[in-house]
Length: 120
Ligand SMILES: [Mg+2]
Image (cartoon, rainbow, N blue to C red; front, top):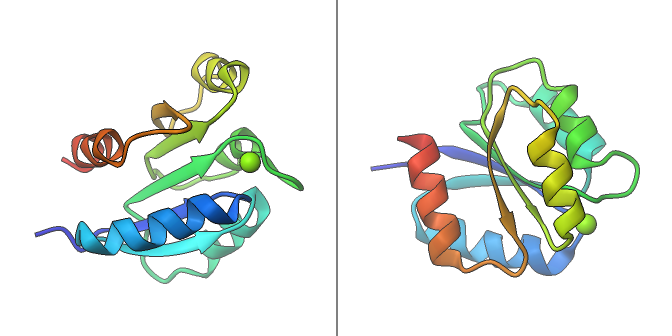
């Protein structure tokens, strides 16, 4: 089962830490990035594709929406944010890779269900 590769993008270390513990337990392989720019580099350097991106929206240097607009590959993105206005903005922006959005704090169960649904 699984083994899919997930790119986690968040400037908040606490979120990167939680997902670093959680995703392997669920059987996923993951890589971390700290902002949109860093994520684009990781995607460019990866030999294979990522199956999924889980990304924060508000980040320094390059936010999650700008990141999504610069990804040319077809990789579904689940966005997360603690700001309702950011969640609304990401839902209203027509992003081809948009796969869902969760508010912070989120339950790992909800996130897990969204991941499974997206990868199915
Ligand atoms: Mg942030």
